[in-house]
Image 1 (cartoon, helix red, strand yellow):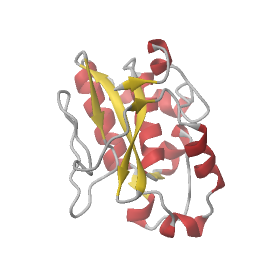
Image 2 (cartoon, helix red, strand yellow):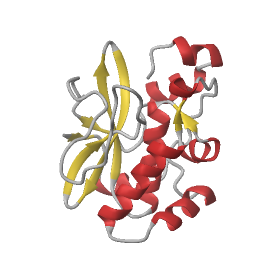
Image 3 (tube, rainbow, N blue to C red):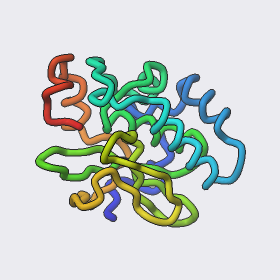
Length: 178
């Protein structure tokens, strides 16, 4: 993995990864019941299971800020990755954003420093044909055969963030993001 920022940046806040928001802090405090592995697992399960992937749920809302994703309980893969990274960082776990080329689309996922090793995790959500699980020791992706781009970002690249901000409801169900 290549890292686009300094190590401390993978614990910081940004416009999309708003770790200081009261809702992010509240959920992080609620989930923080054990060591970093248990916390990373609980945060993963929370985002995977309590935040519906917009396209799977037919939800036309396009949210991108972590706190909005957690509040509205919906988001595309990118937004769900933002929420997971925010929860990890709020709990003191270094995390960043990664992207994968999947069937001509760019898919958002998370890289997290768990048990002294960086692993790729995909809180996208399960559906028929996709079963994503947490692992502290190996990469777990919704699309395991598709290539992962090598860079781990501390915050979403401007092109991804601007694309999400510019989307309108009909584009969610027919657009190139998944």
